[in-house]
Length: 379
Length: 189
Image (tube, rainbow over all chains, first blue to last red; front, top):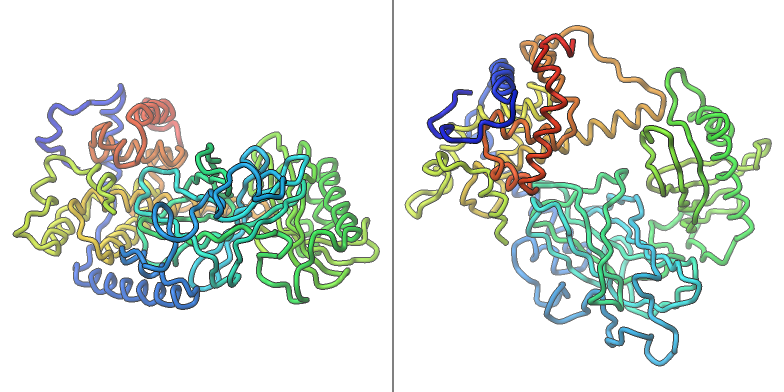
């Protein structure tokens, strides 16, 4: 690439940069070009534009939320509640506006310090959007009340722009979610669904960082969150995202299980604890004997031993929480399990610290704990 | 919604006659001019960012299609295209890495061909390309934007949405990592 007059007066860069420039330019001289006529790309762009509009129209119709299509077109739908001034619920604030206690009950409102906020590593590709779940778990020792919409803002990167939160009581994935006060016992969680627009025809897509303001605590310091790497969640320029009110995690919130309604966390506790013992045994085996042996003992045969390098070494691992997802029978059910994992080196597809996985347990007589399990980043 | 903060960032003053719209110009004409004048530069940039000459043209054409598909008229399409190419290259890189991680977890080891890819004239096998591939994505982007496109620190910072200090820091780290290669061309073989 030839230098231009414009180069004159430019910062020459650190020592060695001249040589680097030469090497880069020599390298790119090898790149062959086959530049198509612009008209071909224009036709592809027109197709993409039509596809995107079709998808967004379907999105708006399916979700029953007028604002999706309108937001992308740069319009504000009259009936859709959106962040900031305007009609409808305001994120981060109770509808009745009392920031201290839930109206008249004496039960304190859940504050940011009471809640652990995280993303569930789950991207549900239900047409047309992608649904993610924001989880707020009560880490306090007392019951508190939570109600309304979590505030959700894009915190970065700076290259991302034009995104708009739309707060609406329903979407295509879960139907209508009532805004209601929820008494959140210690250890229990609520979910809020976040749906991104379709992923066709967008530009500037990156995995964003978020600022989350918990309901009832507007004005307090927001929590900064990144999405789990496993979701590869990407938000694009000008893409709106729908945020639902919080609802009890025991309602399910995830696609319905084939066996019927997911159970509340109070049911089937004995089965859950038995199943979690399997996860603990799996982690103990992984730590002491390696992932190959652990997979062989606790996972279905297709996860069994293979030649070659096999997964990261585990320094320590423990189960730190769980949430029921679906219940088919005592012989088959799924939990979302939080595990705190530490690795001495690379974690590969795992992460240092909290790892959340959808774990499906299936009764398997003759195995060490009576269950085999499958691990997934989504259901 | 403007978005111009990013879009304007990568434009150099010398690009201004090409990319800055006036009321008399149609955006299509400006875009066509950018396509003719800057396609090659964008492909070269994409090739270094992705480490693959074969993927670079697809990526740049995808960037043009995406940007042209937008309803919004861009003040400075070249800057916007550069940002789009960087983002697409980063996405491609992330997908490739995620795939490799998953394969590694399953005990599958990726096998690379021992023969240079004849279709790209040996580009993929160049030591400097291999060395760039070893850099973290941000460092690689900074190196390519600064030393291939000759953008200033401020322009790179604005284009990537990071601070000028961060650009300098990435540059220094990248230079440190590349120094053995620059001092000894055979070091990476």
